[in-house]
Length: 112
Image (cartoon, rainbow, N blue to C red):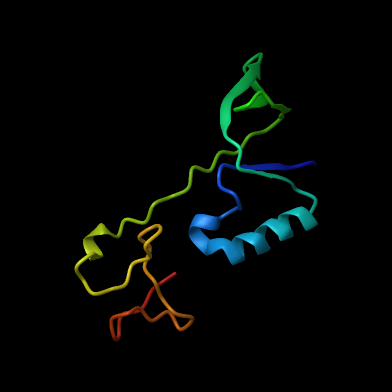
């Protein structure tokens, strides 16, 4: 089955993992045979007889499709931690923790 992965960002997962890890993710996707297209915006899904038939991209490109999976992403619900002393990532507000899962507050760990 051929797979086309579309992302509005310049690299997959870049908001969550940063540029370096985003480059690694992109390379892994391409090595696996995924047609990775970044920096593109979906304009519409087209249907035929009640089933998805194509994905229309902003700019005029249309991709035939039998199945479309949409992932809109997520925003961490961490606003309540703003004045807690726990360091939050400036890009997405996620909790910053080290490889040992420790946060910037002693004895407070991230749980994944």
